[in-house]
Every structure is written in C-alpha cells, then in structure tokens.
Image (tube, rainbow, N blue to C red; front, side, top):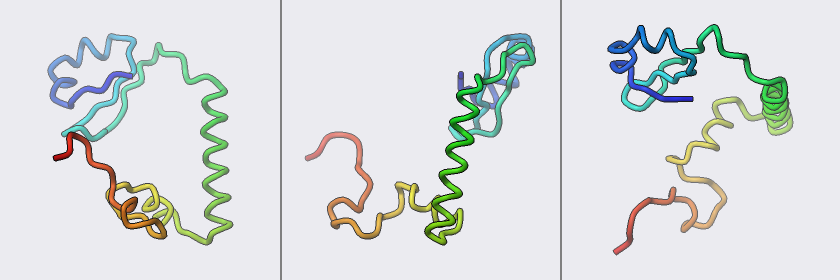
Amino acid sequence: MKSIEVGEFQDHIVEYLSGHEVLTIERDGKALGYYLPANVTPQPVRQNRALDQLGETVQRILDETGMTEDELVRRFDLSEPLEGLPRALRTPATHGSRG
C-alpha cells in the first residue's frame, strides 16, 4: 500500500483513480482515509480471519480486566510512561546517537 499526502492525491487524482494501487491518503503524515480501486481484489480470507481473531482477543482482554477501550489503547501509547516497570524502562526509547 502506498502512502501519499492529500495534496499529491489532489494534484494527480485522475492518475490515481484510474490506477490499480491501494492508497493511504495522509495529511501531515497522519492517515485521513484510504483509496481502494474497484478493480482490486479484496483481502484474502485469512487476513479477515486474523482481524476477527484480533477483535475477539481485544474483547476478551476487556472482559477479563474490566478495562475500557480507551484504557487499553493508552497501554499501547508509547508516549505515555508504562506503569509497573523499572524507571529506566518507563520512558520510550529515543532514536539517534548518545552523547
């Protein structure tokens, strides 16, 4: 799947709409939406099953822990410190050189 900025999509809309490529349309690097050409074969059944399994697993986690969806999402937000870990592991890793 190709990612393009919304301006690029607007500038070349005829080319993209007549193409066969699935696109992620972004603004400032964040997805706004997706373009799926009509002539593209839908995802294989195994991918849909994987999404179903993910949904079932998330629901089971919510049921077993009593967490809300927002609380579960926050657990995966790497910009937030993780509770219950040693201080050195709480801050998300930074990229680049040290020193």
